[in-house]
Image: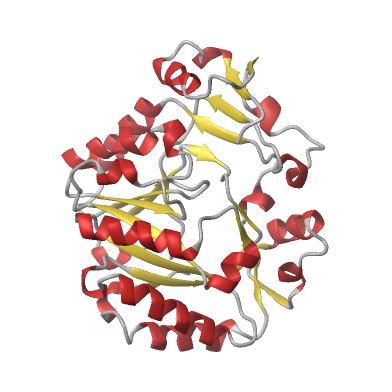
Length: 330
């Protein structure tokens, strides 16, 4: 999975770091002063690095808890506030539509090991926020894909067990959910799984568990009592896409109990213009990025489709779920 582990000298002796290194005994260890000297350096090739990336263990400074972007989640329907935090930069999966490959210069993974600081900052934010506020994990990474190595979610869950008036959303495409099944479910911890139609997943979601495997994991979590949610995004327009989503909805809602879902969302394909340009340079022959696009307010979306496609999919989706459980991800 990794070619090497780089470790900031300042964190090398921390217990968290030692535990992570014990899980990766076969990898060479290289000391660095600060993760940015490796992660942010010029003339890196994201596409090449993605073939055999390194893991960087670092200390996260500055703001660790940030306001969620407008329209990102469901907090507005709960009269709360939305926040996100990233205990990791980059994702072990290789989705061709992912904005991270346009955001970062490096495909290496940065794992911030000062978990206690994240915990303290979340507690401070909770003290200033109304009940029902939502904390989103998985904005700059996949929340669970590296959990067997990081154990971050295992660390942070007890905090939300104590503060049960606030909500944690763990957003993921991963099937690394055993640690959740081995403990009592938390009613205020939402496991939100992202899905695309099987055809899209096979073409563009490289290294991601299959739609069927993800659904199996989500079914087990729901049956164990965990609140689960569905994120159908990014919606990518192409011929017969409505049929593909109808097949996906039939599959998902045959296996899951729709009446027990926490929430369901749809979101169109969208990228900041600068990110899109970088991705085209990385993958100049990728058909997905060659589709006709349109730019508005600094964002790229697919041309001439989203205005009619999303409402059509919403109508199909609402045949299975309660309108109160749905929101559109803007």
